[in-house]
Image (cartoon, rainbow, N blue to C red; front, side):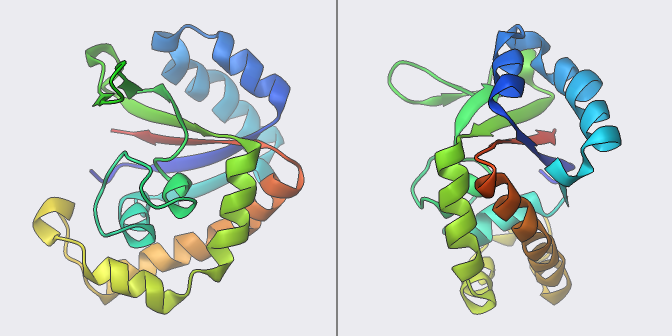
Length: 180
């Protein structure tokens, strides 16, 4: 993986409107309704992660890219939350990737999850992140795990802190979106 990711902080009415959109149309809606509106009118509720999201998830968890929430609350920064598009759970809890939703992941974090993230994220030290980053399997990751990539990922993580704080203070939901 390695596609571009963005976080959006939405209020309850915006989430309700998003949920009403047919599941297979949510990617289109995100890009043609929310994204344009937020970039133009509400840039304070947008946070670019660029391609850092993959390594970021790995360095906030156990070094793996995993959809399971085994390391809350930090696993919720990227893949934690409710799958709104691109992924779903079957009745047994197994994560599935619907064929008709193969272009993007959209995952919703609740205001409670956002508050937990906003509290925990600033406490995660660079050294702790580096330790998990260094456990990343390069073959699985698909990129070199070097100082440049770590610093790039650390930069985007630190840059996201004010976004998480603002979203938590305002009790907003956060959508994680990454095209594949």
